[in-house]
Image (cartoon, rainbow, N blue to C red):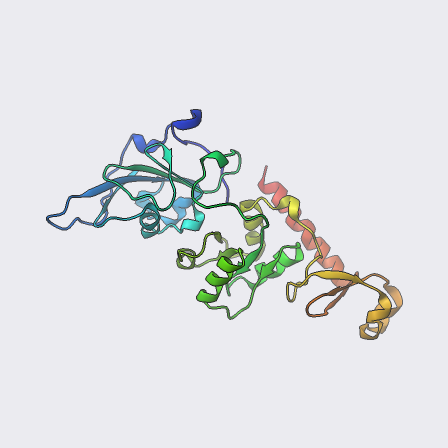
Length: 288
């Protein structure tokens, strides 16, 4: 989840990173004989440490390369998906993923920021997505239903292949939500999120916080079943599809523009509203 920024180096009047001091030796690959060694130093911040071995968490460590490599390749070889990275500073300067790591480089790698506007520093992606739309892997079906309940465009199918997921994320400009970090390392995936929790309700809060979506919740505007949009429909048009009790007691109806599922304010509606309130309260509590 997003963190409150700390320890960002030098430029723009911010504090110098710990990677410039207290260096801890943690040797990477061995350099073949006859080739000059490329040794670089890395420090990962906040939740990015979840992807690292214990000995490399929250310290500046040494990593040796046996070939010329971009900083993106090096970061992913260390186990961190590039979609989880918001900012990279090499020797105090912001760089992009194509930067070639040089001998002696000291790099600080940061996740998404919550309390500090760092847009002037960002170089990793061409532009943010104007709208948060999602595609979810096959293990996140319940999360997909919850996101649809809150009004978010969420494509899901329980038999999507990894190739399909990456392709949809790229061509449809959707954020890929997954618990498979190797899927996020595919080069065509530019916007994604590694979902940490295995509890669907906690996953919702994780996504809402990561992409700052609290103000974008639009409940009951999407079909939970197929992700289609819901439109108001006159009772006369769906009367023949209703059970007698619904025909008698309810007057307001919505219908999915895609699968034609009909929704009304029955007992299921009250359950959905309670769930939406639960998500709002949990999100508010997570911010305090």
